[in-house]
Image (cartoon, rainbow, N blue to C red; front, side):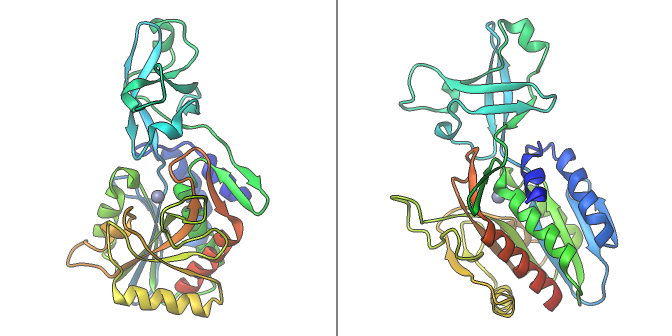
Amino acid sequence: MELLKKLAECWAPSGREDRIRTLIASEMEPYVTDVYADSMGNLICRKKGNGKRLMFAAHMDEIGFMITNIDDNGFLRFTNVGGISAHNCVNRGVVFENGTTGVISYEKSVKDLNLDKMYIDIGASDKAEAESKVSVGDMAGYSEGFALMGGRAASKSMDDRVGCYALIRAVQLAESCPNDLYAVFTVQEELGLRGAKTASFNVEPDLGVAIDVSMVGDVPESDHHSLSLGKGPGIKLKDASFIIHPKAREFMLKAAKAAEIPYQLEAAAYGGTDAGAIHLTGGGVPAGTISIPTRYIHSPREVVDIADVENTVKLVKQMIEMGI
Ligand SMILES: [Zn+2]
């Protein structure tokens, strides 16, 4: 879990993925033919091979906050970078790229809370002190670190560093691949699948598979989601961004059976993954998504089950070795 911890704790809000890209590149370099960043910043790791192009995508950005204004008393107003809910960030810690730490709090009451009524307190006593540390446009991410909870783990940014972890480990462990393999670590997914769009345009895959977190229905009073923690990775058949292509569905189910792992079927009413961008590339690309069941998505403590994570590694490894 040391690698997952390092990945999850890395600072990299959407648009500022430099640190996580460097970290992932160092893990991938010994195992692939080429590692390069495209002009958007996606990290493309290619294991050259003959035959069809098989692409996996895990996004390496995380949700965050961007300063919009600094007031006379040194409090920072902010906008969201990706899906931030006001209630999830009340009195939570954040950290800026230069290490400045802060707490997000709110005016008056949590009733009808929205981000307009919230601010970041970085301990400054006035505007000048705040401006000596940060500027308008600077970004922060949640500062909660990785913690084990029995067989489960909680951290900021499990979305989607746990997907990055599964893809890295699967490529490292795969013994063969009949395809031209592309493991792509995308940027700006949280802003609307932006990196996957351009990466997929460049790679022109014959089949694409996104690996991302997805919501569960196993906590008190939750919505009707089929996924539970601990029952294996999900094979996502639909969300708001795509519907699975029959070729992708067949390939993924075959791999799950061959890998002899537990898996779950998932059909979601909302949400989206990089598969939503990949499948609409060029003349169209059969695409699917592997879901890692996750509680409290887009909060500072996103919880995954470690057995699910390791079974996702096995599933991706099997897909790489089987090929398309
Ligand atoms: Zn995600």
